Length: 402
Ligand SMILES: Cc1ncc(COP(=O)(O)O)c(C=O)c1O
Image (cartoon, rainbow, N blue to C red; front, side, top):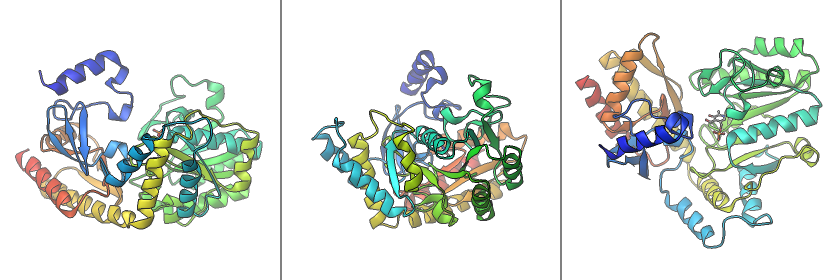
C-alpha cells in the first residue's frame, strides 16, 4: 500500500470527511494527493514523493510561496523569544500599523485567527452599532456564518433550506442573496426597513467583472438604509490589490476582513474599518486568547512589508493571466467543455452542465501529470514564467493522452 493510501484510510477512519477542512477533503484518489508533506516555492510533494506544481495554495493563503525565506526567518526569530504572552506584543502594534498603511481606510484594526471568526466579529459590531438584528449576506463568509436558508455552507455550495444544525430563529435574521442582484438587496432592505444592520459581501470569482457596478450600488443602498457595508476580503485582499475589492473597485466599506492574503499560511485574520464603528467594541465584546499570537504576527508583518516593497500584486496578475489564458487555449484546442472565468489572480473553471464524468477524467489526468488545481485556482509570487509554462506543458500532455 502506498503511503498516500495508508494516510487516506487512517484519516477517513479517525475523522469525518477525512480532513478538518472540508474543501481539502480528497475527492479523486489515487491521482489526487491524499496528504501533502512538503512545499517549496510553487511546488508541493505528497507522501509518496510525487511533485505537483500547485495552484491550490492551501485554498489561497500561500500568496508568496511555500517556505518563503523572508517570512520563515521572521517566524524563526520570534520563536526564539516566545509564542504567546499575557500582554500585547509590540508586533501587534507594528503589524496593525503596517496593514493600515497599506489599506488607508482601515482606521482601526484588530486580529483573530480565522476569516470566518473575524466576519462574525463584524456582524456583532454592526448589530451593536446600528441597534438592528438582520444581516444580508452575499457569498460564503465562513462556516459559522452560514446561517440563512439557502446560504453557501461551503464556497460554491448553497444549502437547500435552513442549513443543518442552525436554529430557525437565528436563520431568520440572516438573508442569503445572490451576487450582482442589487434589486434583491433593495427589496430585502425595503421589506425590513430599519431592521438590517449590515450587508456583507464576498466577491463572486467568475462574475467578478460585475463588481464595477454592484459594489457602488451596495454602497448607495447601505447609505440610503443606514446600514453598514462589510467587505469579506478574505480571498480578495492582497490578491486583487492590497486593499482587495475596496481598492480595486474604488468603494469604501465600513468594515472589512482580511485573512488569506496577510500571513502566507500562518493563521491570522484582521478585521477593521471606521474608528467610530470599531469603538462599539468597548461594549460589544470580541476577545480570543490567541488573537495576538506572535508567530503569526511575525509572519504577517514580514508578508505585509514584502508586499509594500515588491510588486506582488502585479506579479499575481501577470502569472494568473499567463496561466489561465494558457489553460483556456488548451481547453479550446482539445474541445474540453469548460472555460475559466474571473479576474486573473483568481480565475475559476466554469464547466458546461452535464459533464461531471469528463470533469473527473480531466482533473484526474491533471493530478497524474503533477498539476494541483482547485476548481481553477490561485497563483503565488513564487510562480515564474517557466513554472507556468511547465504546468501548461504537463496539462497539454495530460489532455493529449486523454
Ligand atoms: C470568501 C471567504 N470568506 C470567508 C472564508 C472563511 O475563512 P476561514 O476558513 O479562515 O474561516 C473563506 C474561506 O474559504 C472564504 O473564501
